[in-house]
Amino acid sequence: MTLVLKPDVTATDTDDGLVLLDQRTGRYWQLNRSGATTLRLLLDGFSPEATAARLARQHPAASERALADVRTLLAALDRARLVVTA
Image (cartoon, rainbow, N blue to C red; front, side):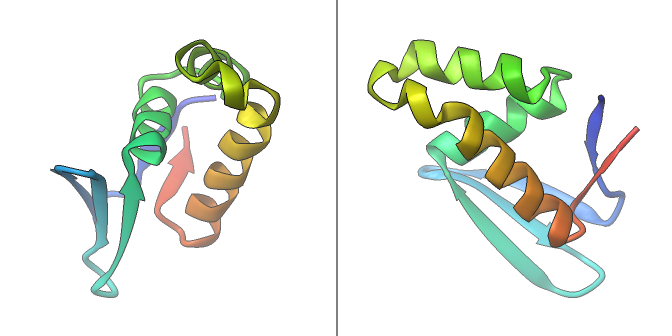
């Protein structure tokens, strides 16, 4: 699975994470640092499982819920029509 932002979606880094702007609708979403890291890994071609494993290494206390959190973010981005799989 290769995840990409839709063509009308722009991403801008912030001090606290990442902002996604859907230029078609004018709506935006703010991701915290963890969400931004997750999205970047997914956009870099990592699977949800590999992304969760990397996050779990960085944050061992959250390792049990890492995969569920990655899948939740991915589902939210999909529902908002910000990403597509290629």
